Amino acid sequence: MIFFEVILPVLLIFLSGYVLQRIFKLDLKPISTLAIYVLTTALVFRTFYKTPLDLQLFYIVIISLLLLAGLIVITQLTARFFKYDKQQESALMLSTAFMNSGNYGAPIILFAFGETGFHYAVQIMVFHSIIMGVFGVYFASRGENGARTAVKAVLKQPSNYAVIVAVAMQQFQVVIPESYYQAIDLVAQAAIPTVMLILGMQLANVSSSTFEWQSLSVATVIRLVASPLLAYLICLCFPIDPLLQKVLVILAAMPSAATTAMYAIQFNMRPQFVSSSVLVTTLISVGTLTFLLNIMQ
Image 1 (cartoon, rainbow, N blue to C red):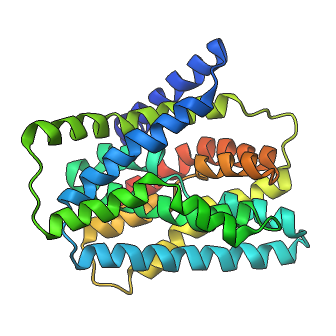
Image 2 (image 1 turned 180 degrees about the horizontal axis):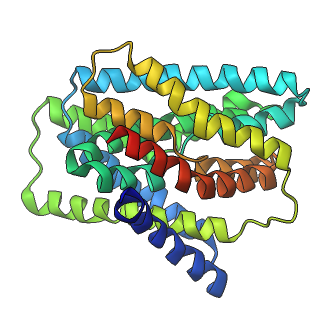
Image 3 (image 1 turned 30 degrees about the vertical axis):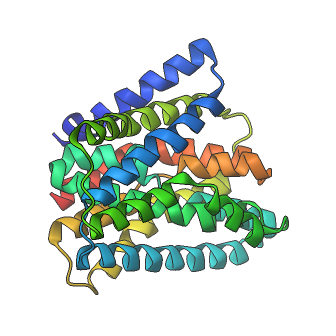
């Protein structure tokens, strides 16, 4: 059964982080810093050092950008319909336009489709992190020199430089000595399980006492229903590998990205709402992803 074979193993890792945080109440900032600046950077470098620049990668970039544009339009129209102010719209945007393709999506794909699907998922995850570093920071900081802040944030992300260095070394056929590559690979392997534990720890810090149920319902429908449907329609326009299509659609059905909650806290963009949307969409996605995976397989 899909739930027991794919979803439950991932949830148990989240649960471990959740229980750990409830008991010890750890400071997440240094752990997140380690994951972002060291572990994820190593994962990004390893991925692009080994990934050829082919047409499939080009399609990943184009489809991801089209999906982002579509979700931004849908969210803006929804915000106008409900007469949200600028801050409410930005908070809703953080909850709907960016999916948790890394510490939730990638392991789901690994359990569902194996190493080949996981390879696609990591490529998509890396590009999504770049998108969040630009557009996510922009929406979180609107009204506070958003564009300038976004550019500075992008320039501070080591994973972006890791992409450039890895692609250059691949194109110029620079061979990394085996012992050094094994060291990079060892650190990269720790990235996914660490960020999965961090997500569980982040969810443990969310309080349900101040939930805005109407806005959360809107965010949930856009994130878990509209997003995968839109991704499927976009994928039909491109001659991509059927497995890549499945990976793109399933990742589009992931809950709100945990990273956007950190942005919301940093820029004080309704952090309680954004964090609660991460929690609610993550819980509901257990059912929606089980349904979608049964269809896709």
